[in-house]
Image (cartoon, rainbow, N blue to C red; front, side, top):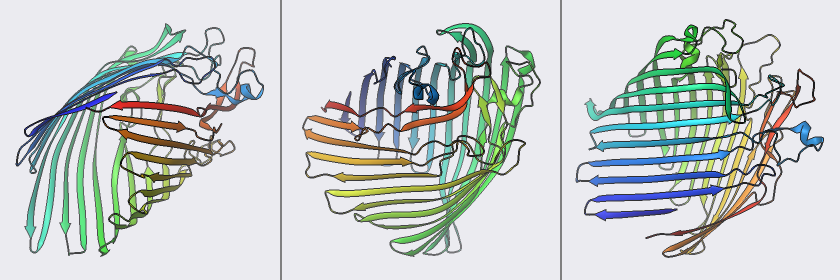
Amino acid sequence: MFAHEIAIQDNRLLMGFENHRYDGPWIDINENVKKNNALLKYVSDTASSQFSLVFLGYENSWNSADQIPERVVSSQLIESLGSIDTDVGGESSRYSLLANYNNGNWIVGAYVIDSQLDLFSNFTYFLDDPVNGDEFEQVDDRRIIGGELIKKFTTNVSDNHIHHTLGLQYRYDDIEKVGLYKTVQRQRIITTRQDSINQYSLGLFWEGDIDLTERLTTNLGIRYDYLYVDVVSDNPLNSGVADDGLLSVKFGLKYRLRDDLYGYFNAGQSFHSNDARGATISVDPVSGEGVESVDLMVRGEGAEVGLHFSEQDNYNLSLSLWYLELESELLFVGDAGNTEPGRASRRQGVEFAGYYWIDESFSSDLELAWSHARFREAADGEGDRIEGALPFVASVGLNWIPSDDWRTSLRARYFGERPLDSFAAQKSDDFTVINFAVTYNLEPWQIDLKILNLFDSNDHDIDYYYASRLQGEAAEGIESNHFHPIEPRSFRLQMRYVF
């Protein structure tokens, strides 16, 4: 890895490149990760404006150590670092060019992206096809063009100042191919579905910050989003066009109780967009049965109230209560090629973040999040729990910088038990991992030592509950927990030369 910045009068040129190779600790899979990252950034400053041009490049290939059935590990057929299907993995690349101009009153941005993904997976092994197995391939090949135009200005109404932000955002996705294929040892044998998609999105928005008094400010916003998709499928019954538009509003208040303490309240509407194929689908690509299309855009509504308490160079504390409601939890079933509309949901919770600087060399941080997630609608044979929704997450860190040359950190993360089915009859175990890092600066060299999973935890970083079938098991498969273990304790040494 290297990074280098060149200064030429008021212009700067930053160059960076990283080459990453990794095999992993797995018993029967060499991950063979081959990842390259590249950065080239040009910045030109004047007294009143800034222009930047950024190129980002990423490419990667790998073999996957996917989740495995817990029943197979319990019966000692394989170890927890073993695999069932050793053929899965993929390749991915993304190249982007971004330009931005900002003079304080106007912001003009544009970008172009080339993105490709080729992913092989097998989660159920021999459940659907006892002869060839259930391995499948997902392909996404697209070009993206987009940009924004933003105007900032201030007006006065009586003694109040209104700071306006008026904007237009545009994006076009030219998806040459998005496909799902049945494969054996990464060789295609059946096309489940293959589509090409043109997708256009347009957003218009206004935001205003109003100083009502010296202590009280308010924020208002309104936004309209429009989405249009044109799907051409290998099955004409699943081709078609769809469009949708939503108007969203938001409102916020901020009141400064004293110099180091303020309270705030925010409420507003949002949306999440569905896979374009779900908006035009008519028949299931696998079974051929008729299915209902889903909305292209789904409404969300939320609110937050909180307190923020801070003193520069000493502490920064915040506490908030929030809720979020969605009209539907949309789900794209990747190995079936269809989209399932989920039930309406409600999430609510409490979050705390605290950062404390004990002195110039020692600091600590603590982040806590509690949440309560439930479906708001009943369904036959289903409970009200949202699968995989985390009820509690915690992160704590200690940082010690004894001198300009040395820097150390100790960080712990905790994830609580989460439901794996809608009744919470099946739950994941909780998860804890502790990492340690130390950095030594010996200009122009920098040496980093990281100890990941310091205490060699054998917790699961992924848990799912579903049916799968190994050869020799019953045709209907066996429902059980499927997990991916956290990687065992590992040491990573990195040396950097800065010039």
